[in-house]
Length: 84
Image 1 (tube, rainbow, N blue to C red):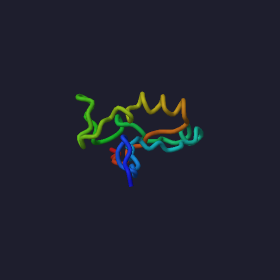
Image 2: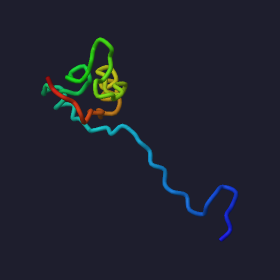
Image 3: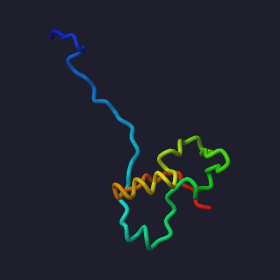
């Protein structure tokens, strides 16, 4: 089987890592005291604005979460969020 200049005849599918967004109902967001951002988490150090577990808080800060919610109706909940 001849190969072309691009490489092999079979190219494996590329795995893309991305932030998982969860749908949030506006009524739930307004009526319940939701914990949704780094600033509410026990692992977040507000002095250095870093996560003590080593995760990047850029997508999980309150400002970013509210912007994502207002534009898409979704939020990027951290799976390791620890409530005080």
